[in-house]
Amino acid sequence: MADHRHKRETNARRMPRAVVIAGPLAVLATASAVTLGIAAGEPASSNGADVSAAASSVGAGAAERREDVSRGAGRGAGRGELTSMMAKSQVTMSSESTLKAIRTATDKLWIASTLDLWSAPGAKGEQVGEIEAGERVLVTGRSMDGRDEIVVDGKARWVSAGYLTNEKPFSLGGACTNGTTVPAGVSENIKKVHAAVCAAFPEITTYGTFRGDGEHAQGIAVDIMVSGSRGYEVAEFVKKYYSELGVSYLIYSQRIWSVQRGGEGWRGMSDRGSTTANHYDHVHVTTY
Image 1 (cartoon, rainbow, N blue to C red):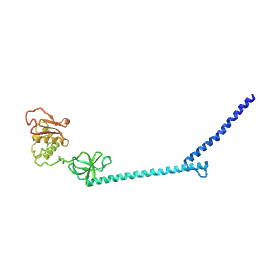
Image 2 (cartoon, rainbow, N blue to C red):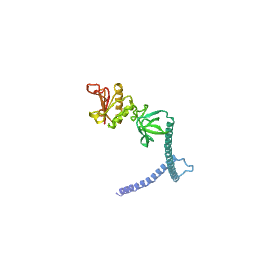
Image 3 (cartoon, rainbow, N blue to C red):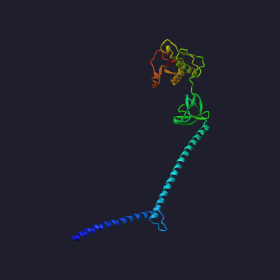
Image 4 (cartoon, rainbow, N blue to C red):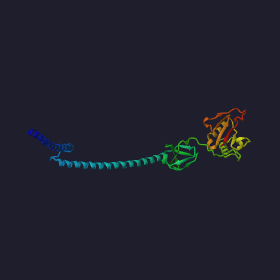
């Protein structure tokens, strides 16, 4: 029994010894790993540097890495400055491009409608005035953000796209030179129709306004006495400018066109029995 107790006690004493021995072994292994790591990352010291020296070397390496990070931050700031310089360069290039576009502009187009003038395309532009319909301007050929670039008083200006044309636009306010007039009591829109048609077709000298029936009696209708192909030209002309002239509907050559059903184009009408009743010898215009 005493021997058995001695074995158990002996075994009990050996276990702590194993633990005590394992501790120094772990320290030794760790020190070896650190030393090997340093040996792999640093040149071998000629005087056999110890663990303390290796630790100092590790600290120095960390300091160098921190210095590298600091230098990297400096390089980042340099990139930011470069980006800023590039942005300024782009602005300068843009200005030079605009000046070149102005200097080389030779083509001229007509302004089809009164338009606002803008300092730049898109949302960046500021309104700097307007240009009247019928003016002929230099164009650079550049377009951006729904606007076309033109040259006004030697400066680049931008207008809404789609209003530059090769054809001189007709001015609805042109002078009537054939001496015809309409009564003062007719509507302002009838006066506009007469002035526009008279300026565009000065050979037409007869306009029928007041009559004892319907829209003529109200002063909102006029009969433009013209026939044949010229009548078609007059009818299409008034139709083209219906909005500016305040036109409600037109009748010519037994056909009718109205704003209300404009998408249907010219529509046929029933026979009313005579050349005049079927509007073959005049263009009828009713205004608002």
